[in-house]
Each structure stands twice: as structure tokens, then as C-alpha cells.
Length: 353
Image (cartoon, rainbow, N blue to C red; front, top):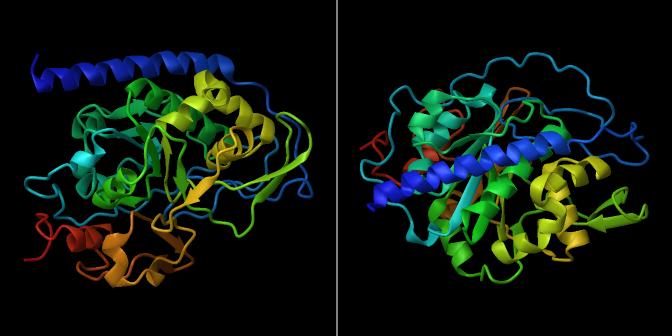
């Protein structure tokens, strides 16, 4: 059997497994709990975001969300492909990279990713969304999974997608599970270097916290006591070894991840931290080279950009929070992902000569 046939067979198996997982999830969703008071929990919902305002304010009954304003295209008019002969990093061969997104962002947030770092890890990267998109399937060679989760940015929809990501990773046979959002640029070479320094046969939870002290919550899932734990911010990205993922299985597989998130009433990245740190008793290993939109990107010194693993962007009022790289015009490259890619990969077709 040729290598191409083996890849196609693997892709079809993963998509079939995902369909089975979705059936389990639809039966696993439980009723939402009562409204939580601000005194009990004051934690804003996390969701993939870039140039949008913050999402959601409470965890009570879900209210209809307004129709989102269409995002402006975040890619240069001349960007259609990246490097003419992109070379995948062999150190990523056993890595499963998931990117959480939503149908409303396929033509905006995903385009800079598809034009820049995705071709460097196209066999390892899968997009988890909430709609069917034939054009995106074709562009990614079938690496798009419709989770059939809600397109909402509320915690239950986010946990639904993370649950699918976890189960598809477990069925992939890969040694590492790395999650990113659709507003992340991933320096694939540095990600490969990072993971090469850790054993997937040991318990590793690699990420970056966005709060200064451990999060304290009422443990509604098990004891009812107040507990504290760290979690890796989903907007910066995090990686989990297979050994640790196997230990998470009683709390995360087959829709259990959603049930845990529903009980503690927290979004996906916090639920992940709760399961790993509190239930499985594995501590977060902080990796400062992960970065989320919650940080000021301009404070990353240009000389150190090549050593970072992930980047993001956001907009506050009229100010863009982006990395300080000016290779391409800001009007054409508002996220600075193309300029960043030109810094790291100057032979990309859209980079100045």
C-alpha cells in the first residue's frame, strides 16, 4: 500500500471515529445547573477570539446571542500559498495538533493559519468546527471535523468541542495532544523542539497560566469543597502527553469531559486544568513561550520571536494587540501573522524579496 493510500485510509478512519464520538456526545449532554452567583464564581468565559469583544458574562441559562458582525479578511490580497516546498518538521510526526474554530470564522481567522504555518504541519493538524465546509475540507486535505457542537461561545459548546478533540486524539495513536485556538500562530519548529525534550510515556501537562494565583472554585463535581488548581490557558495553547491523556480517560472520554465541565460550570481550558491538576494530580508545567491574546504581544522582543512557540492577536477599542513585526503593510496584514511568518520563513511566496 502506498504512503498516499495509507494517509487517506487513516484520515477516513479518524473521521469515522469522530462520527461515532458525536453520537455519544449527543446522548451525554445533561441539563444545565442553576445560576451561579458572582460570590461563588467570578470567572469570565474563555473562547477563541481575535478582533471580537469578550464573550459571555455568566453561567446561568443560556440567552440568545446577537448575530456576530462579519470579520474583515485578515490576509494579504496576494497570499494564496506559503513556501513553495514546505518541509514538515519530522519531530512532529507523533503530534496531534487540534485547532478549535467555528463556521463564522472559516474565511477570516483560518485564512492566515492556512496561508502560513498549517502547510508546515498539515498532516498533524486538524480543525474542529461546527459546520460542514467542503472548500475547507479540500484546502486541508480532509482535516476538518464537524463536531456538531453549538456555534455558541458559551462554556458548554466549548467543552463539547474539546471533548471531541480529546477523543479523536486518543483514537489517533499519536503521542502528544496539542490544542490551539483559531487566533494562534504556531511556530512548528519550536513546538517540535519543546516536545523532543519530554517523554510522552510520562505525565506532562505543558502550557501557560494567565492568572497569578491558582483558581479557586467550589467542587460541585465531587466533594462540594473549595478546591484550587492551575490551568493552561487555551488561547495560548497547551500540550498533553499520551501517558497523561490515558489517566484522564475516566473523566474525559466518551463525553465525560462535557459532564465534568457542566458540573463545575467552567469553560474548556479550565475544565482541562481541573481534571488534570485536581483529579489526576498532575501539575501544570509552565512554558513561557506559549502566548495568548491576554498578553501584550508588543512586549515580546523582536530578537526573541523565533524562540517562541505560539502567538495570538486581539483588538481592544481601536488598538490592535499584535507582535511588533513590520515586514508587510499593516493594512494588508492586521494580525501580523504573515509578517511573523516572513521573519521565520523568509522564502515564503508572499514575503518581500
